[in-house]
Length: 202
Ligand SMILES: [Zn+2]
Image 1 (cartoon, rainbow, N blue to C red):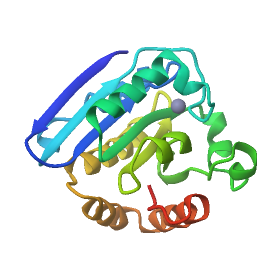
Image 2: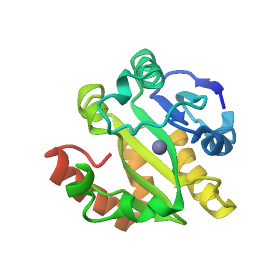
Image 3: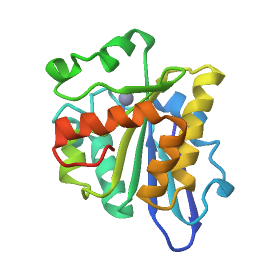
Image 4: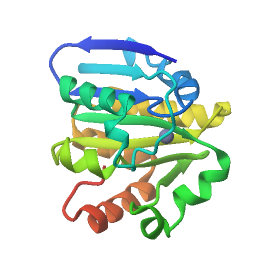
């Protein structure tokens, strides 16, 4: 379900939220993305893009970024050069244990996602774009909620999107996340060190 919105509050960080990057996820992510209001952005710019339905290919699959929608994602990142990048996904409930499994590193080659609350999960975006497309100091996350979310999950997801929309620097963002989810931030820092070496947590 295509949706596009730019909120421009002058100088400051560029933010890009992209939802529905594969399969039918856009039908769920639009429910959160369309709730972001102009008032949620304090300074800088926020670009919100929700993609149309596309064939499902994992963003961890090297072929993903050669697909039409993968190229669209790369184009948007290249064009808007976000300092804060949020890839908004949803998952089927049966995949929860795979996504959060401590063995995900062995099975999928990436660290497990971390549950914030109410089934909402956070992790780094696909390593291929994290390290090749973004600068180290950029913030670059994958955010997941159950598909067709209940209002509790949707609210947790939306609250985090609003933290990204309102924050104007990495420090401010990290401090806000630390206030709400201290334990999860600690885990994210640990995974980032294990996986990326001296990379920041997101
Ligand atoms: Zn997804």
